[in-house]
Image 1 (tube, one colour):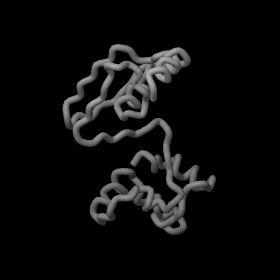
Image 2: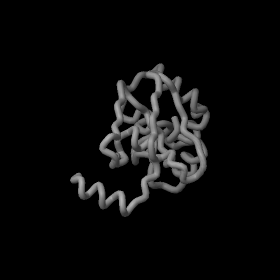
Image 3: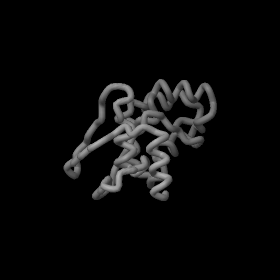
Image 4: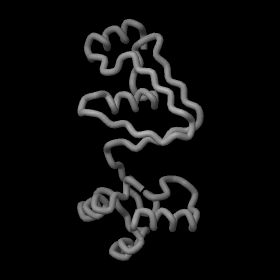
Length: 137
């Protein structure tokens, strides 16, 4: 993005965050709360380098990895098991721990193919998923 593009953007969109300095110790779990429109999502997007930093002095430095859970639940059109694993290698013990922590063990019996049931795009599955917060596992 050119300097001219940045200036045009600054004129079109009001800057939500100014003079923010955040230092989060490595390994800390944090949450971000505040009033509607206060800039919570913009702050988090900036930390993830998904928001434009138009100030030449602005920068973001992250050591290690970051996990971000957005406000919108997102479910893959795949099996429930695939949604739980989300591309990671299957580990029987860990998988059972997740099912237990999410209180899904008994509920899997209500699905026609258990954790191999295809979910995503079907109203009945969407209702089941919303009820059980599968996206937040």
